Image (cartoon, rainbow over all chains, first blue to last red; front, side, top):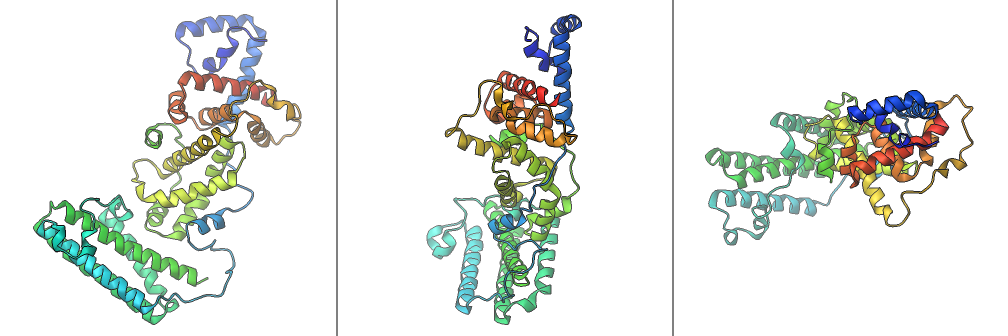
Length: 226
Length: 185
């Protein structure tokens, strides 16, 4: 049975009627058994919803997630292939190092000399004066969080060195050292110009570069250890 | 839309203490992220499954965690991670609904959706009856019922999320409850 109060019983339950409406509804409920019964059933539904508990899926979904984020499979699953050693070609890594040095040196130069793009190497000119760095992981971390994250990753790198080709790990170290020098240069420059937005962004970018390099290397180590 | 949803007060759920895993995962620690996944999977999966009626729940749950991995850097800790994750999940499911909405009918008419149910349950597995009944609701009514009665969203917040008026949200909620009462009452 439906009367004019039936469509409003949910509002009655949720306390959304005005005082006058609630008074009228109470008066109607006192006389209408159908509405009282409906109200009781609706309250049961609401109670059941409030008591609903979380349930996990029937199957573990981690492997699909790990695959999509480009990371290792579940830690409790057996390895699907023989361990392998991470290796890049030396020319690739040297090229990466040189590019990084050029970019970093050029970027600091820009910050200190006002960013005349025509007077710096073209690699540096692509940096972020016109496009400020987006909020990266390093950008949203406090100094303490960043330091802890770097320390954890460096420890992981240290523990997993044996899984890397020695020439590869050497170039990784070289790249990290280049970034560290660039960070130091940026910090020194910021010491003279603390309000320089470009230098601040550049320092954040460098910190993010170091974080990314360490993340990628340690992720590769984890993968190779399977 | 997402910003609006993230500002909503709804969807508050008891937080799990996974703050150290959050910080490590944000720094790229896959083990910490897997720990987060395992801690939050039941809640995320249940929310996805209830909102979708079970359709593609596994795939959507995976999508949620992939997006979490991609967006962890934007988590600033203003809300608890649990609340942030919950809102992100709702947004992802709603995005999916929007993309599907052009292809199929969303709000079924009539109250005969329970015709396929086997009448009042004689099973004592009450939660399963509740989940099964939810899956039979029309999509629009189910979304609003889950957001309001299971997750605690207010009508104005649901309206913002779904792009409907609070009055429509109230009407759909009542409709869902009226459909469910015969099976759960």
